[in-house]
Amino acid sequence: MKKILLSITAGLFASLSLFAQNEVIIGNCEKGNLTQLGTYWYFYSAGMSSISQTPKGKFQMTKGGANGTDSAAIVSGTLVNVGGTITTPGTNPVTGDAAVTYESAGIGIPLSNDSLATVAQTKNADSLLKCKALDLTAATGISFWHMGAALNFSVMVTDVLANKGQDHSFSVPATTVWTLVTVPFTSLAQPSWATQVAFDATKAYKLQWQVKDVAGDYNFGIDQVTLMGTTAVTSITVDKPTSTITATGGTTQITASVLPTTATYKNVTYTVSDPTIAAVSATGVVSALADGTVTLTATAFGGLTTTSAITISGQIRPTSITVSVLPTTAIITAALGTLQVTPTILPVNANQAISYTVSDNKVASVDANGLVTAKGNGTVTVTATSTGSTVSGTSPVITISGQVVPVTSVIFANPTATISVNGATLQVTATVLPTTATNQAVTYKITPISLATISATGLVTPKGDGSVTVTATSVADGTITAVCSITITNQITSAVDIIAPKAIGQIGNVFTFDGSAKLINILGQVVATGFNTIDANAIAPGIYFIVVDGYTKEVSVR
Image: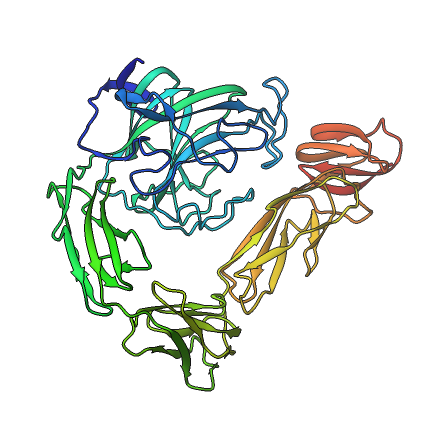
């Protein structure tokens, strides 16, 4: 298979570039769907479009990667046109844009283990993206090998609403051979529809390759995803290849070291092969839980690993756990008040390591030391479980009151809507988050009021054609709002004037105004149109409605 090495910057082919083998590779496709970050490749297809992966299945790599590697992330499928043709544009059912619109498909890499699990992305694009990010400030960009269809590469950032600048993108041309693409962060740009915000390398949470805007079949491959400008770890060792723990609940420290000392990312993660026998902290402290042998694995950033064998003996497992509370009344009434739970583990010489969970984390939280902190009103229990076994105990019921849960956001499930039937109304409903917020009330406001009114409960009543904006504001916090845009058409106004934004003059049966207008009879039929003026002398006398830029006023033709 042919391969070329080209540096692509600002969407153009530029000078030849060497493939930097000493940079940090985060996705080499040689570990199945597992990346070098410990995350998993994902794929998706939107709407009626398809992709050559099993729905809800494990991402399958394909033989024949770039640079002579064994495998690559290669997908194919069909994009479906959901809008119209180039000569006759259709309407995007999500955005309402009158344009040729195609669905999309793509693949990606989460940059942290919770990048996808904690994020619910919806069509309204207003779900808050609060997931763990990977700090990429030490890198200068992203490089990868690409072959096949033209696509859009994006570095996605968190803490930004999806419709306000989450995507920082780069256009990759089509190619029939494996081609090295280098994307400096300075070459990333945002879509024109997004609120433009500067790229923040500290908030990167996933990389995504997407095909769109071309109806028909597609095929593309990605391989060897690399952090540009970085130095990779080349080796990792531990100070104790073997060790023993004999004391009940004893510990041992395992420390890993990486080379070269100039490696960009020196962080190491630790795991144990059997968490019922031993636990390991983020710093490599191994705590005995039960007799047996475990393997500690130390993993460097980028995927290199080493191991340490640990033999544990002399451990005594708990037989029972009881949980008491202080104060014994088990009541919290103060805002964000606390209460201490205390376990009693028998026998007294058994391993004392335990973990805590709370029955409802919307009402309270519990830390590693058993301190319960109120978050909302309600009741909870705390369960203490022996680490490494199923032995547990549960506290008495804790009653919590007097909590004020603040509002964090207000959203509309459908941020765009239409009213297209004369005299029809529309109910809009804003949701306050979290759902446990103490004050769930909102107020509604609509602009301009010349086109529609809105009730205290969100019922919109149109008065004329045009576009209006509904703003929902939290009563608890007036700085927290959400908006819904509504397009109104086909309305026949009543005998109540709707004041136009600019004056409509009338001299006899000649009407003057600023802009384009139409004259409509009481049956809703357009009887005349004009720019800046309409001469109605040839029109039968009667009541009419003149519409200027969506604003309507009742007039008389004599």
